[in-house]
Amino acid sequence: MSDDLSEAFVVGVDFGTLSGRAVVVRVADGAELGSAVHEYPHAVVTDTLPGHDVPLGPDWALQVPGDYVEVLRNAVPAAVRAAGVDPSRVIGIGTDFTACTMVPTLADGTPLCELDRFADRPHAYVKLWRHHAAQPQADRINRLAAERGEWWLPRYGGFISSEWEFAKALQILEEDPEVYAAIERWVEAADWIVWQLTGTYVRNVCSAGYKGILQDGRYPDPEFLTALHPGFADFVTSKLDQPIGQLGAAAGTLSPRAAAWTGLPAGITVAVGNVDAHVTAAAGQALDPGQMVAIMGTSTCHVMNGAELREVPGMCGVVHGGIVPGLWGYEAGQSGVGDIFAHFVRRHVPSEYVEAARAEGISVHEHLTRLAARQRIGEHGLIALDWHSGNRSVLVDHELSGLLVGETLATRPEDIYRALIEATAFGTRTIIETFAKAGVPVTDLVVSGGLVRNPLLMQIYSDVTRLPLHRIVSDQGPALGSAIHAAVAAGAYPDIRAAAARMGRVERDVYRPDETAATRYDELYREYRELHDYFGRGGNTVMRRLRSIQRRALAATEEGVPAAEPAVAR
Image 1 (cartoon, rainbow, N blue to C red):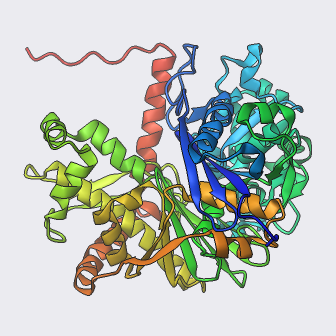
Image 2 (image 1 turned 180 degrees about the vertical axis):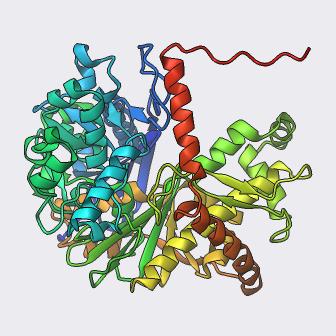
């Protein structure tokens, strides 16, 4: 570490699904001195385009890139004010983003949706990570790659996700060729925001490897892309390829324009961009092999390092240097976790529960948690599948959907709420067991994110996985991780590991598994796995067939075909 950093600070900014969060961190010890949150004005666009009566189809999830800039304008200055530090003492800024979130732009970084001629075209907008409408394209990529024996496919557990760069771009080509032709840069939002900060476009190795099929310095070859679609042959060379920046390196310096937005000094170091989950490993001092980090929010991402390259079925990817230089970084995840609980509360909880929560002065989530915590394991008689937003790992299929088995006329909201929590825990256990069977054992589970505030959920996860849970102390784990990377990029520490040792913060063994509870959950987990394999591994394709029926019905509605008149009893 440099000689005197007691009065040096860095800023970390985490761009999440619904908001951006900034934190000001002291370089010497990782103390978080101030933070601020800015909600995206347009949130997640799922129904119609903002300001335009243009409907979106099922599984669409878009965003407005200007919302990200507003985070820089609002959250960063507010965090610095809250910290009470002199902005001139800030030596660097680091950022992270949800992934894979893609921005179609011109060569200068202008998003296509900001051009008048494309303002009413859905494919000109940011495709959020949870945009799953490219599943048909992902299916074709996977079939063709398997048929051709593409060498890179095992690096992704045998499947390329509909959430990732190639499937989303192919969807644009096939559904709106004019927009596709206008795309000069197909940019991860993690890199786009750094581009806005510095004026320089550097593609981070993490996103490129996990989401962009960059392995051993190579992308899929033009022959493969041509076989997918003749117009896709030059996708890599014309729209995607860009210089690669390593994690913890400097992407450039803060431009005068971005300095005016943030209130920070022009010329300070801007770190290479990163993915929210991967950057959090440094915040939790979880950089050694066997230490899995679970970032638990609207979705959950699981990342860990390994000393050796292994092929893990259904993983999101393995990238050398994808989390920390020198090790193989592994990623898996669950596409829906907090989103599932929020959906249930928003759509399926009766008014008397809402009123009871209000009377207690707590949220509906807290009220349901209190009621669910009184139950014995298995008392509700339910098993759920946590696929309301598809399955990211280990099935990698976003045509799958949620399932509840065992509901009766006696089933209560708290029963379903607990069953949903348990289902997400079973999903995490499935991932952990799959890694272990492939030779990548998980010895520690380090948790971060908004869901760690729920003690019932945390204890269930510990019992189901039979692992103690270590908690990242920060409420803003990704933002702290980004700040750590900023400190390295600014030269305050020699590498990410050294910076994490001084600036990361973790509480160990906050939750420990109860053997009696774990044994009871083993029985329920067996039922979960039977349903998981039956519906997810080809035993029954009803979920995919229902999606197909839904799409045909919606297409008929858009074409003006009237719905059938209801039968009238005579």
